[in-house]
Length: 367
Image 1 (tube, rainbow, N blue to C red):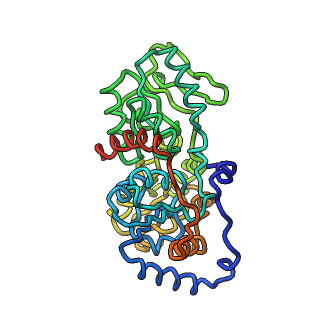
Image 2: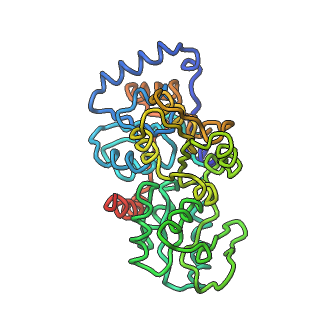
Image 3: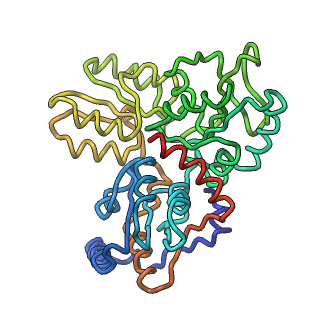
């Protein structure tokens, strides 16, 4: 979510009093409110969040796990420690009696911002003119509620990195082709792993409003939206080549939001959940270079002192938008609940909710 969207949604600034509190005071206040609210409060925390926030999460996970958790909780208040599209998903899957709060409205996602509904509808019209009714839209959950609703309206679904293969396989039982939004790398890596050659994939450029391809346009099976994760694109072939020379015994494991070239040269590739479980199950004394967000990598390093673990890119920084939510913002959100003056509530319009629910439910059915 960009800054203009934040302003439109009425995002408020953190009051100065929270910036002046000590860490101890912040933590004690959060614990006290959690105890007072009890089962009325549910705090989901994405794996990429800071440790200071994750310590208070009632559930931690990747996008799929947290979507499932949001759909199941009966808590009155869901304080989502993640980014805007995740909080939107929680609001879509929760009931009218539940309130979803994002502690900091600046916690957006650059990838989600790379596909807006106007660009998507324009692209759909152009692609329909080329291919007719042969395309099914799929969107990564790292997308706006409006894009999810677009997919639901047109018979498509959402996917996560955990179930992308299942969803792409399902898509091809529905239509001859698919449009994959907004992350071209996850779409390309998933389709390639399922046996679709690269020359049968094209890229849709939403800025130029045109299809990029080489060869026979009629043979295209996968149309990839020209979007990416700004964090995972920073893992490079050069990073891998350096490790192969200096630490040839080191296992390299990356997220499928990395480029095709990086994934193809790595030893393992999979979702956040897959990365965590692979390291957990690895033998003591093994060595690992991980290509994903730095908060998670640092947490994995702390949890597995018996293994040598590094970031694939030694100069990587944590995701800036994921890092927006911190302890002061979490406390502010919780105190606003008790004061009856809720800040930063996430509310998805009813018409978008209905169509987006259709897309999300298809994903959850294949989880």
